[in-house]
Length: 177
Image (cartoon, rainbow, N blue to C red; front, side, top):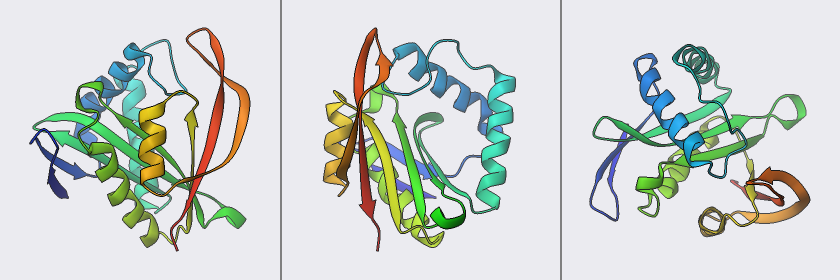
């Protein structure tokens, strides 16, 4: 567990999820869905049962050292999370990163701190290279990833339907070694 103070002087705790967090996880994800933000999933809200099954799966993967998964809490509210999923077989030294921060907490350094902590844990899992995808037009995320040392290695034209338009997916990577 790590603590830090955001740019708005809010005390944030970063830790792995627990089974008891399921309702907070559901509320966090449903808020992202409602916002229709830059995430792949959209539409129907997730149920408590669905999130419970998903969280159980995440907790098993953490135990098996297949995933890094950290959450940021302000008081008792989940305000951000990061996941780095470890590749398999010949790609076991790579990880794929996904990051989400509550819209009311963006721009405070939470995403950056989550990524720093996740990258440290990824090294412990022998992950040497992290890749991610960002929507073209998601300038705050793109800027954060560049600041964190990620480099563009490709762009998939019109790969994502977002708010009625087809937009590009930008692929980035960072070498941890």
